[in-house]
Length: 248
Image 1 (tube, rainbow, N blue to C red):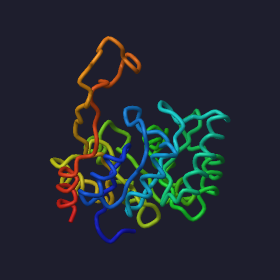
Image 2 (tube, rainbow, N blue to C red):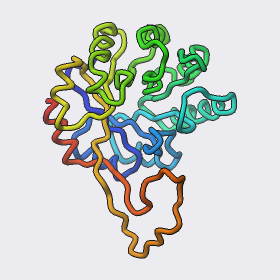
Image 3 (cartoon, one colour):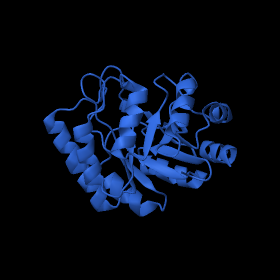
């Protein structure tokens, strides 16, 4: 268990990697497509991130957005992506697989754990849609998972704080419960007191304006429900520094 509070920043670009490092983050969760909750990062992004920072880099292994009940083909992709992450030098793996009934897919998770080897595995927020969070916590302990990321099965950590506090107590030193979802500078201290957690996961992002001067707004590049093509979000080093200071 960590001896001090740890701040993990979720990043999906090199811009955010540099911001997180500059703000004093303790660890990175690297993914892409944060608009869909995060998916497996590209080879190029992972390789350049590992070159760019000495921070521990935990790599998301998730083949698509939406649910966490995967086909055999998708599971095959996950195994190949995990192998790639290990070969490139990932410090940790972030993943999760469920059965259709909302229970953890123990057989497939055990396979991913074997592929991860000595690298610690975090079970991501698939946990928040499991049918029984208490039983799921014990399943993850039995599997040897190092961490579980959760909002307490609610929209935000504040709303799920009671369950998170219970899970932290149940977990003891067997597994680290990491609150994540809606954590900001304004509510961090309150969340820490309510949950007694020692590690926290957040993006601490801010809007980034596109450099494009010519803008054809008639041609969207995504689905109907989409972010603007002329702006995105990235980690903000000032926000991260504020959170790290609050955690110290």
